[in-house]
Length: 144
Length: 141
Image (cartoon, rainbow over the protein chains, first blue to last red):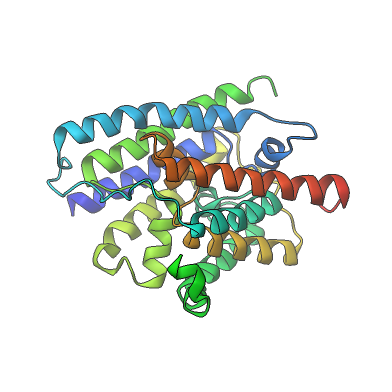
């Protein structure tokens, strides 16, 4: 129960940060990706601002060895970069550039973004549901 | 416009605080695509309540917070084909890459993860290329 409460709190604070930084405004996100046009550097401040507390959180987590609720820390992958990371990230980036939404903001706008936000979220969730099946049909990708 | 970066920095710090809380209290990585995707494809069944709680907070707070800070404009396109295709690309791409801007970007870069940095480089590259082609060459977005 406490665990779910803190999960809801984390999600809520994440949502607050996304609207404060205006990452739910697709024209700012597309402006950041518009390197050859009217470039908007806001996203660099968002990512930079988010990385700093998290850098110290990782140090604290290593010292604690366990989470405050006693569960083990997440299992972290090694430095190996599978082709999946590159192929998937290029696909994700293409969708991000087209729409101006990545998964966090896509969920955060669900409650106030109208039918456009709802349709994007449904399509994104459909893609997530379809991915295990797609991976199975593309054996080279999943072996890689 | 000139204050965009201040809102960005403030919001970024809040996002970092959320990720820190989720890591230090729950022992989890705050990756939006992983939390939602694991709930949808069944891989996160054992932690479904924790995932659903996180998502409930993420949907509920912006409903009040966005108008409070005057950031309720999304400027999302009304082009149905673009919404569906981009949504599918984001959903499939983030699950194949095993992470998005929050998981690979915020949580990966902050622990100096090479994987996170490679993923971030490639989704930025993909996004910049698409904006270049579709905005400046085709004029569609």
